[in-house]
Image (cartoon, rainbow, N blue to C red; front, side, top):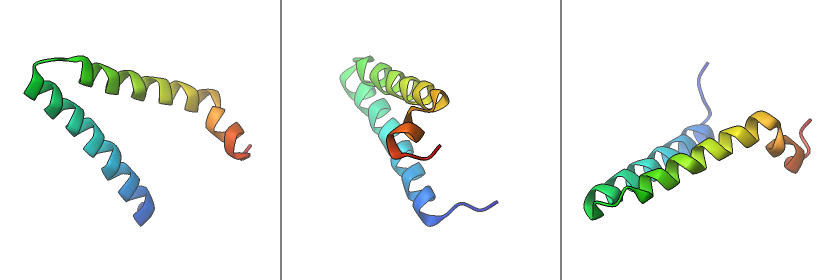
Length: 60
């Protein structure tokens, strides 16, 4: 199944944010940027599995 253009653009933005966090951590030598990105991804996935996003936007 092919993805819509919008879906691909959002996916590219998420990959870009992750790459930016890795690059910043490498530049500064501080792993907090990658750790924060990983935590945000984990929290977002947990909320998605719980159905929070559907509740917020009314799509049951």
